[in-house]
Image (tube, rainbow, N blue to C red; front, top):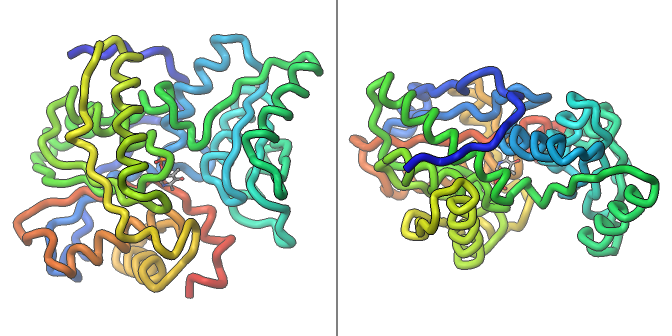
Length: 325
Ligand SMILES: *Cc1c(COP(=O)(O)O)cnc(C)c1O
């Protein structure tokens, strides 16, 4: 299978590190834990959206667009990385954020503004409607907007996570590591769709578990499966069904999106104190909390090796200061 990758803008400086978390592994008496450091992608605070934006922004420029439009939560990492990418490429950027403006500007929201993005608060309107309105306005002003869907999760964005499986399998081979399972935070599904398709293409033998941060298993599973199939077609691979590779765990969604509980708090403090690595309160804190919980329940043997995929989000820590200690 030979995917035809379109052009991308190299926001990332090279392969992100693959490391073993020795002290966390020892502390948990569990499986060997490795980490893929996609918090260290090169764009303004890092994260998984930077990979997707490499392809999305390249397509925007190829289409002659001069303005990026997208939407997300008020502490959206996706919006912050989109604003940074726009600045870096000399494009305008409009962000539609859910809810109303908070009294304290902090975390990703502060960074959005430093990057010069125009911010629109949805208040009680549907964000999609406001996005359509802003896009129409830009067109009427003579701009050429490029609309990026929620989380950058379409076939163009997911392509980046297909390609990174090539990067990962080369790293695993070079370091002689065998991974039984990848665990990562999953929400709009583009990351997982890319990973499962990449796993099929590059013969990764482990399983891939998306820890849902907000959506029920069936819903997210269907979306990831459909996006992976569509991405295969987009990359010239014909019809390829990888739904059997999509594993979702929704046991940790109950508190709701962006609500920090003991689970996230413990995971964030533990990884910070054992490894000097920062997780985020919304995604990686919850996914690592889930992994720690699963290890304590005996879901993995000590002989197994687990790869935690760090998807970024560190700037949001500052907006959650009050709930993290
Ligand atoms: C967006 C995001 C995710 C989820 O990725 P999806 O592709 O939307 O599923 C996970 N972690 C962080 C830090 C994110 O910003």
